[in-house]
Length: 260
Image 1 (cartoon, rainbow, N blue to C red):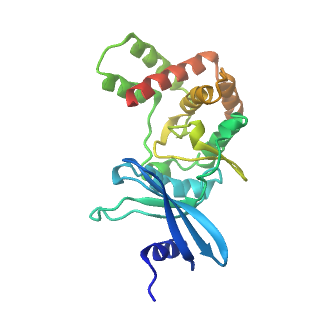
Image 2 (cartoon, rainbow, N blue to C red):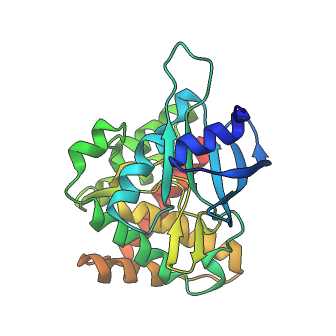
């Protein structure tokens, strides 16, 4: 007897015999579809997460397998697929099931910064591979100029943002998450894991910290001030001054406002 399509898909993806396969739609919108797939393997009940994304927004499908090979600070990748351009199907990535995990911001947010730095270090020598996968280099200056162009107005804040971007340009180029927020940092048995890598780029790591600091303030109701900036500097061996922290906040504010 032939397998049903879902069972065949999971068995082929995992290269294993599976049974009692059933799927539950968790989220669906214009940017993604996420399913939880439950199944039995070797008499044990298991589950995984399947994420599909549009072909023109599929960086995560390309990037996540590399990250997962380099570090355990991201979801384990079980399989992935990129259909030919002529096939009307979305690229997909199959990972361990972390859908019910809680935000790491319920505990010490410094653990999230520590995880970010661990991922930066894990791929520090992989710049060419990251670029080949589609990860773009975006300097603070380029990010601000993009934001100014989108705003289509000449604002006093733009001149300040340009100066701030110039100040940050001396910092090392690292892998940035691009959407470092409490909802994307999850607590697991092996520590903090960072999800959602579709906006990753090579650039200034302080911009991730700036975005995360603001999100922590909104999530917890407490302002961490410059503590996360100082901790990031301590971990990376860079001196992060108050001027740099302010500059990264301003660049983050301008670029995020332009993307809304």
